[in-house]
Image (cartoon, rainbow, N blue to C red; front, side, top):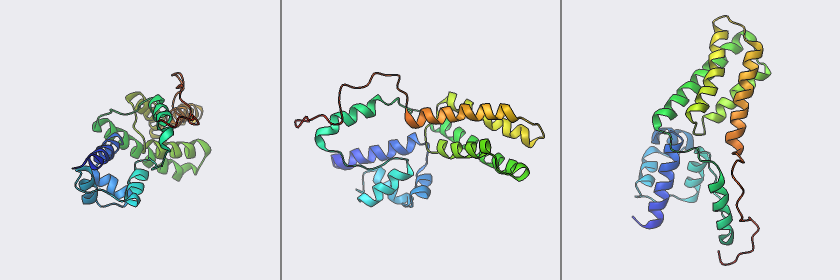
Length: 197
């Protein structure tokens, strides 16, 4: 296996595992066959750009070309984003199971109440959470809101409490989507005129 194929194989496998997806899950989302994904991850096959775009988008990644002189700045920006990786597949499966439960409960609640803003937002946020790695504390925040849906289905009214829970889920979604600005910004600039990079 040459270096390029080995590096690409490692990147695809790590991205898939960080998303708590099996090869079968990635195949279903990307439209690329499972055997093709297996061959890419083992380094037996170097995929074309179209295949990499399909796999990347299924993993919520984008394939971009960056000018070589800007790579230092881009790498610095990427490294400054708090890492959400390193979770075990078990935690990822727990999160996906919880989200599926939430989606089922939302469908049940809609049968009785129809749509309303907080319910629609919760549905949107759950779709977002399917595509990202969640920490244990994140899962607790989501579970709290989903548990309220469960109480509603069992005849309890929750109104304001559910609205507060949805706002916490929204804050979590925003934190994940936009990253945290807790760390100082890098000295590098995207527009840095460093031709030696």
